[in-house]
Image: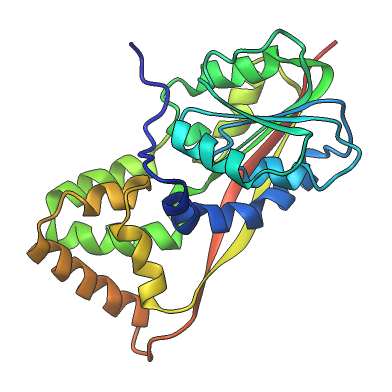
Length: 268
């Protein structure tokens, strides 16, 4: 059976600490970029713990929002947080969406397509379930400039060949390089394709705040750190702390994080 997601998911709260707090900052930027101001029904593909779906629900001109994710634990976490009758969360495959053609006015996806090995299939599915004239939009991190990840993997790569391999793999994930999202949208037959970038700040209170997700169970960094024995993990933590401190006292740090974004219209 083909794997439809390579993202390591274990715990909704763990994801919130690792990425959810940042996806909540990115979500309103993607909604604005997509130009989704109203609609009877909108789909969030790869909804995770619900950041984009909840942002869409802030708009009373949207009648219904369906979120779908490959991870049952993330879907359950989103359901527990939800108190809006317009929202519904489903477990499912982005490459085989369980919805009829033209079921949605718009379909959006945030920070997930880079973890879908058959990303082109997922884009075609987003187009299939969106009505003619509807918007299909997405955002993925610019992996090579993502400071939070590079700080760990660049440090680890100096002392561990496996970390170097993982760093290289992370940097070439699907749809994370210039122009790749726009090309995928054109290949899927979407019209009026526009791409751009969206930038947020990732703010950490201290090195402990920065490092905590690294020893969790969610995402590519935690997946790597979890392979290390106690000695190697302690050594990596010490070296990454030096990079975080950067000659200054421990305390708050703010790193830029940029995502590629694309939108297109279903012809017809």
